[in-house]
Image (cartoon, rainbow, N blue to C red; front, side, top):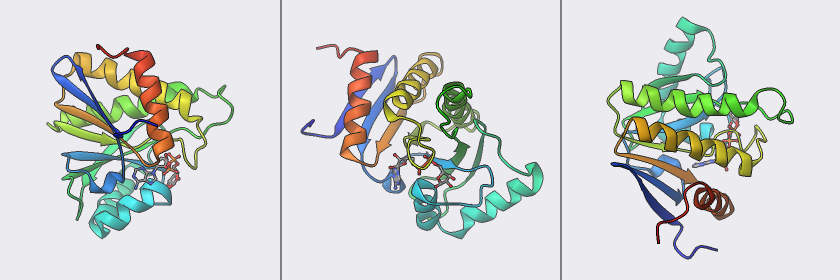
Length: 189
Ligand code: APR
């Protein structure tokens, strides 16, 4: 078990952070929600964000749904952060895991990349992600963390936001992300 569950790595001018905690408490420009296509809320981190952020978030979601119908897997939209410390919430829909032969890794990559592209477009400099798709959507976390970290690192190399943070809910999830990060980006020391 890593004593301090907090790791930071530099990716060019950007910082990649792993931390363990509740994403609704993060003081960043935007937090990302692992939503479903209806954008009407749910359990897990989706439920936590709507509960902590209050009804303004759902009001924005309803306005978006009235225009686009539903949010396709891998796409991202942005709403107010409501009562959250974060100013904005970027909602994305991760893939449900059906065994790995339904394009799940590519769809998960899209969810991260489209969320980051939207953040950049909106002038957002600090973003926090949960571990998308690894709860109710049953995406195996080892594989999901590899897709998540690789996609974020590649994006930061081209578009240096100030910081991208992964906020892992459980110590076990933190350990997995930390192990995979060290494999992808062997620590300098
Ligand atoms: N902060 C950070 N991470 C959290 C929090 C929180 N407050 N609450 C849960 N998580 C973690 C879970 O432990 C898991 O690691 O978020 C990760 C994603 O799990 P889910 O929230 O279940 O999301 P996902 O697997 O993408 O399934 C999405 O679940 O809640 C519904 O409406 C949502 O239908 C959608 C589906």
